[in-house]
Image (cartoon, rainbow, N blue to C red; front, side, top):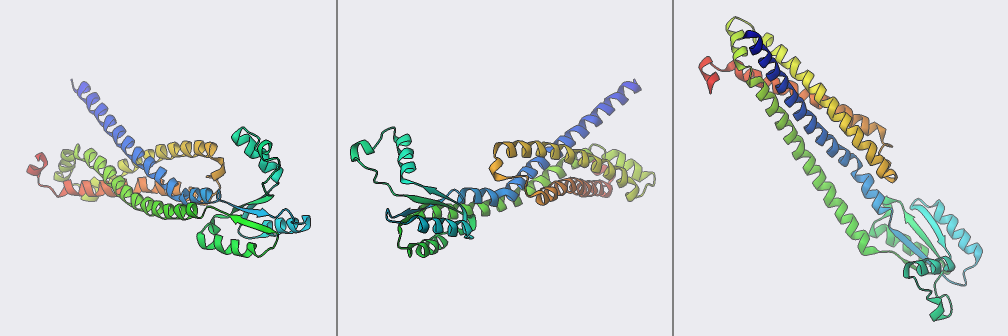
Length: 292
């Protein structure tokens, strides 16, 4: 009979530990995913900014030497990520592929212009910087027109600011929720052993002696939960990097290491503090209060 009861208690204890580990790992995993978003939010924003194109249309009278000098100066400029020369023939072929019709059959000639598509570095994709670059280039006599989507740039920069603000707010709120959830799981685990705590206290055990095994057990569970969370986070990061290689998610290795270390340390610290507070609460209760 005693053996069956011991097995039941052991299964119940293991079940309690598993539920705590699952709770810790899930919370830390979600917190890690949010950390990845925070770390890479600027990189994602920069990726979209660098898709903005400034198109420089050239006069038909532009000399080859002038065009080559312009291409070289653009390639050497700080604001240029990439500059691509597009001839009027290439532009006509592109329009034909897009529309499925050859507009030159109706017009009789190619009215398009030779152009250079300039992809800018993210820091220069602002209305002020674009206007300054455009005004500087417009002084060249062989440049007929410079076009870019100013409304799109303004909208993109406004949205980046809003998204960055809300990501920080959500990160703070989610961190608080993570602490509360892990604390709740630990308190429930300690609550199931409140009578053992009081019995040890009644036979003369000191508070630090009673707390020590509870804290050590919780820290072990926190380490296991953190390892499980980090394994899941590594899998997510691996597949995200395969799906979006252009974002180069693994390039900033220092921040990624700090994130992983932070998640691991958080799993230990939160469980340690939560267990200390929970055991201290039951140590301070009177015997008759344990039933409420």
